[in-house]
Each structure stands twice: as C-alpha cells, then as structure tokens.
Length: 319
Length: 298
Image 1 (cartoon, rainbow over the protein chains, first blue to last red):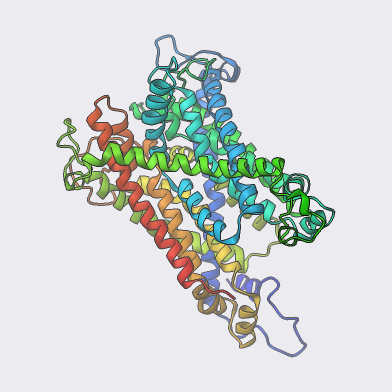
Image 2 (cartoon, each protein chain N blue to C red):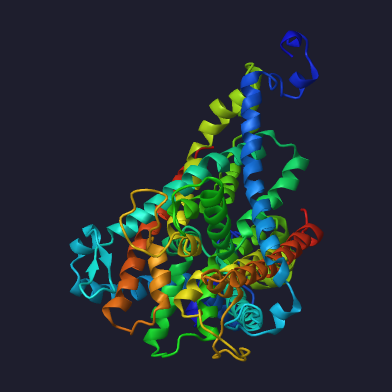
C-alpha cells in the first residue's frame, strides 16, 4: 500500500520541481490513495467491458463454428437457421445490410455535408445558434420512433400510396432512407467541427486572392477538413451497419438475397433482434447463431471505428 | 452585383462578395435545401405521430395495462418499467462514468500506453452498436445461470455499459474546460491533488457534467435494441416493483404495437411515441437550460 501512495503522490505535470530540503509531499493520506485506486478501477472497467464483449461473443461463437464451418458461414448464400434443413450462409444478411447502409449514406452524406458547410461557413452566429439544437433533436429521436415513421409513413404512404411503387409491407428502401435522416446529425456535427477547426487565416487568404465564399469553401476549407469529413462518414457507416430498430421494424424479416431496394430483407442486426424474440434454449445452435452474427457485426464496426479514430488523429496533427 | 465590383462594396468588406452570381447562389440554395430536408423530415415525423396518435393520447394510456383490444390497452407497465430501468441505469453508471473521467483527465499519465489504450477504448466503445451491449448482458446473465433474463437489473446493466463511454467523454470535456490556473492556485495553497479535484475542479464542472449525463440518460431512455435481446418484449399486466422484477419499456411497447396488424395498435404506438418524445424533449430542454444558465465562462 505504501508503495502505491508514494508512487501516486503528485500527478503528471502538476508536481512542481522538487527543491532540496523542501518536503512537498505533505503527510501521507491513505484515504486519498484509496480514492485514486477507486477512480483508476472505474477507468479500467471500460477495458473490462471491451474484453467482456469479446468473451461473451467469442464463447458461443466458437461452439457455433464447431458445428458450422467458417467458410459456409461467410460465403453461404442461404440463411435459414430455423428450418429443418438448416443453412447458415450469412451472405443474405450482408446484402440487406449493404442495401440499407448504401441507401442511408446516399441520403446522409450529401445532406449532412450540406448542413455542415452551411453551419460552419455561411450561417451567422444567431442562425447557427437556432439551428444546432434542431439538429440535436433530430439526433435525439429514438430509433424505434424512426422505425414507426419508416413503416407507416415512408413505406405505407409515400412509397406505396403516393409513388405507387410495386412494394410489399416492408422494404430496405424505406428503412435505408429513414436511417439516412437519422445519420444526418452525426455526419453534420463531426464535419462541422472539422471545418470550423480550419484556421480562418486560410479563408482570409483565399478571399484576398479574390475567391468568393463558394470557391473558398470548396477549394480551401473542404480539402483542409477532408480527413475530418471522411472520419465522419466512416462513423456514419458504422452507425448504419449497427442500427437495429429501424431495420427490425421496416426492412422485413425474410432473410434472402436482396437484389432490388423495393424488396424486403433481413439485416444482421434485424436477425439478432428477431431471433432474440423467439425463446431459444441457451447453448442450442440457434442461440449460438445470435452470437456468431453479433461477432461479425462487432468486428466490422470495430474496424470502421478504428479507421475513423485514426483518420481523425491524423487530421488533428495537421495544424 | 457584377457591375459594382470595382468599388469596395459592403458585401466585399463583409467577405461575401460574389454570392449573388448564379453558381454561388445555386450552391447556397443547395446548402439551405439540405438543412430544410432534414428539418422537413423532422416536422413530417412529428406531424405523423401527432395526427395518428392524437385520439389515443388520453389518461388511459398512462393508467391501463396492455390488452388484446386496442380500445382498452394502455402503457402503464411500460411507463413504470422505463422509470425503473432509467433510475437504476443512472445509479449504476453516473458514479462509474464520472470516476473514470476524473481518473483519465486529472490523474492518469497520458504518456503511459495503458492510459492511451483506455482512451482509445472509450472512443471505440462509444461507437459499438447498441445491440452488442444486449448480447454482452445476455452472455453475462447466462454465465450467472440466470434463467429468467427479463429483470430490471439486467436491462439497466446493458444500458449502463452503453452510455458509460458517452458520460465519460462528456465529463472529460467538462473537466477540461476548467482552466489550469484554478488547479495551480489550489495546489499552490497546499491542497493535495484530490482536494483540488474535489473542492475546485469538480464543483466548477458540475453544469457540464449534468448536461452530458442528462443527454446520455435520454439516449438510454429511447434505446430498445439491447432490451429486445434481453427479452423485454413481454406481455406484462403488473407494475414492475423491484430490481429483479419483470419489465417492459416505452420503446419496446412502441415496437410491439407497431408490429401488430390492427390499426388501433398503430395509433397506440404513435401516441406512445408522442409521450416518449415529450419526455425526451423535456430532458433535452433541461440539459440546454442547465448549460446556458449555470455554465461558467472562464
């Protein structure tokens, strides 16, 4: 215990340079050492969570892959875990996930970037102050409410009644469109931060050379903030892949290869949500399937997140 | 506009010259349009759920239990279940999140690899899909040999872990906003590092910590995916009354009613959405109020 106390007295950067003869440490305070240990434990808990996620996903996944070869799982094109002749090819789930993600990005990237550019470069402080809380509200709408909106209004009213499209009760298009709106605030706020961080000297230099604000924005500010913008998009992709409730409600629950956005389809998250509703016995193949798909989902989003963090890290070093 | 570019006009002085040319004008219109579409969808969404749910926004929604008939069904257990889960989540996650943030911001040596790993890890955890936290809690409860996984504490643990990184990040930003001089002055007067944190830094950052915590809890309140995995979609006709009690929550109730074929249940789902959004808006307003009213500008 004493070793810890001595080790921890005076933290990083805050300890003044010790002078000879001066007793800077004061008396020992065991209570403080305990508090510091508790604080540290709380921080370590976050790492424990990550390890816990990995372990919780890996153990059932390993029993799953003992029965189903990894190759069949990753490249099989038929997903029918509950059928008598069960088949565990995850490709149908991936096609549905790809469709919803791509549609969501087609909505979120242009509109999110447009909103970010407007807020960072064109809006007056007062307009900006009024608009940002509205974006925060858009970000705060529960995904289950977005799901209800996607199913009832976008799919039922807009796509079927107004546009007379040939589509059933569900479609990956409706889910993707609404998911895109959900991701707009994510992309807008991170890219706006990136663009606001571009030094104003660069804007002034551009204006001094005779550029108007559009030219300055597109040729000076946007390229300078590009890595932040890319990081925002990557994070948006990660959110789109992991989003559950919208697709569980509006995309349908038939796992099949999706070739047309008006078809229904089951995404990876949609499968986990749906399969969890059925009461599968712990340790059964059906139960383990949940975790195998969860592991795949976790690894994909992990990759995306680290990509995003690295890109931002690089961007921060630029100035 | 093009004729007056030789003189130093007001737009030139304000740095907005040339904005009325067709190209830049179109660009500006497109920017406006992207914001308009975002807010247009938000408005449409609000109108949709208000119109559809208006007829069911009665006291009955709060007092009645779910039922097979949409005319008599209510969301009373879901309201109480949400309250139980959120309060438990707050109790579990606030002390942990704030403690971890204090460690990372005030005590941890940022040059050590382990602390850098923790920071990277927190950033990553903040972006892990919500449903994965449900699987984590499911695996954990299975490990503890818990048979019935529909218990308040199980859902609260999943939601706590979900918003823990959000609270840590918000708290760290609040702590970082307290200027270095405050710490130096306190240390110079002989306070220890912990006394400095406890008596100076923490009180000064309470408003931003409160704001971040309320926003994080409102996210947890609207979250359904992890609870779905933990079996919260159940037909409950009693009031949840403890940590080990069965429960369902408002988002789960909305999900349940949305999936029914009868139109009456869709109206109930819309009405419950209005209720949930109302609570969330109140929480957001409270957070913004605290931020504007109490936050110190150094």
